[in-house]
Length: 145
Image 1 (cartoon, rainbow, N blue to C red):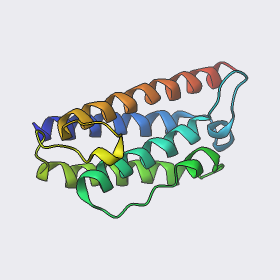
Image 2 (cartoon, one colour; image 1 turned 90 degrees about the vertical axis):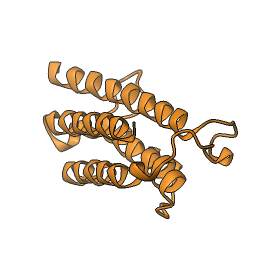
Image 3 (cartoon, rainbow, N blue to C red; image 1 turned 180 degrees about the vertical axis):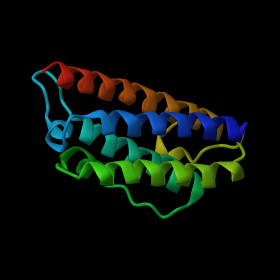
Image 4 (cartoon, rainbow, N blue to C red; image 1 turned 180 degrees about the horizontal axis):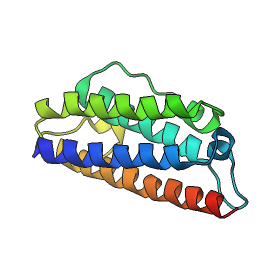
């Protein structure tokens, strides 16, 4: 079952990289259209931070220290750095997940509710897919302009 999760995360993170890479230029990654709260670059940075926090630190004790407010305030990270961080995140997941007991209780302090590691992974996978859809939409909006 861990391999199924690894496969799904790798697939979505590869899609994330493809979406980011398809933006016409570096500047367009950081543009925020009217009525939208975050740029594609911001969402990408947030997704990697989120996964490194909840999977890396929460499941794999990687020592990752999250700065969530920075995820939403930092700007103009080069595209190559975003792509590399998505790669590093995928590698971290492939390293951490094989040792996880999916039925064990996930540390309650992360969300304040009881859930298993398997449920936490599903929650995080859903979050990744949701934001990936936002990035796809922002990219297609940019290509129309």
